[in-house]
Image 1: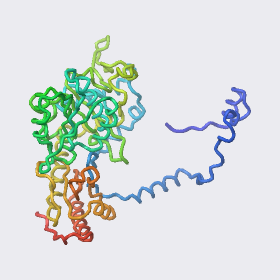
Image 2: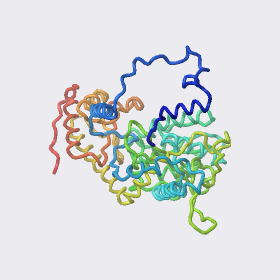
Image 3: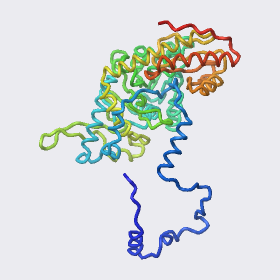
Amino acid sequence: MPFIPHTDQEVREMLEAIGVDGIEDLFEEIPADLRCVELKSIPPAMSELEASQLMAGRARQDGQPACFLGGGAYDHHIPAAVWQITTRGEFYSAYTPYQAEASQGTLQLLYEFQSMMTALMGMDVSNASLYDGASALAEALLMAVRANRKSKSRRILVPRSLHPSYRKVAGNILKNQGIELVELPFDPEGGHTDIGALEPYDGEDIAALVIPQPNYFGVLEDVDALTGWGRRNKAMTVAVVNPLAMSILSPPGEWGGEGVDICCGEGQPLGAPLSSGGPYFGFLCCRQGIVRQMPGRIIGRTLDQDGNRGFTLTLQAREQHIRRSKATSNICTNQGLMVTAATIHMALLGAEGLERTAAACHANTSDLVARLSSLTGVSPRFSRPVFHERLMSLPVAADDVLRALAAHNILGGLDISGDYPELGRAILICATEKRTVGEIESFVEKLARVIELQGGVPCQLQPKES
């Protein structure tokens, strides 16, 4: 909405109507010593043209680096139509659709989003989004504890191979609610959670088991075995997945034959750009039997009194979000604008488009890993299959390597030593469908040079096979 300032005449009429002489009189209750003095450090005002030129110049200083970062946020191609439609006034300024009679367009879009997510995840029900993937996991675990009425322990098994930020967020939210997160180790060779790590908990009272797919290292977990263990031990199973990966991998609703109980994750790969860390959105799906425990908004399709199709919020009263301890959530909201973009993105790409994108990402990452592995001292860290990203061991310190690559306009991956010091000098790399052959070759060449300068063994580049 454009800003339209009041004219001097309008200001005078307003002051006369309320019976004061000037604007300052409206603030007379504020003591003089608390008021701001002249703001001497504020620069002179700029015109719109000058401000645009200044910000464009600052943006150019950031450059346009080739991004090989992953770890939960990915540089995917987003069709131009996605945000052209998303930022239309009808969507851009829409409020939470409590009044169905005035919000049919928004409600229908959210219903379509839910339908797409349940199809992608193989689940029965989806809500209409949460803050982000990490808080979605926290909500899913709270939901699992409520839904598992047979469990009294309030203990949840969480693989150490799960995203570190997700584990931290879940821990911060759950620790004051008497819920214990028990860490499961990952296999040092495969990078996955071996079923043997669950043996000490056989027959014990466990409220829930978290199953990432792929995990933080990009490694594919043995989801069928893990889901089966959870079901045999009467633990709720909570999947944390990359939605793009689900277009080519078995969906959570099919794991272990009967599927998981709850599925959640970060929706950023579905049309949300990398934008200084957000905003993103979390998704949450579940099986029908526990839908009453689902937090967030759920849209239902119905018929009005004339028999016409209509959409409305369902299964939850508006007031449930202020019922304190009896509410299904006290921390969730919907990220409606991000969900709008995701719905349009999935509609444009369709099932085939998502599959092609996922396959292109996997092919690029495989190509990058193969090329990097030709460098002396550089090798993949784990032996199991991966999707999207891979952990690579280096012969020199990772932080120095990444800093040098950044100077060459290459975002070369994530240094994981802070969260996984036992893995030594290693970086997590990712190559989405946007990375070109030239960018991959440039990364390999620059990394070879950087390693040599950092004191590593000189690398002999192997020519790329045609």
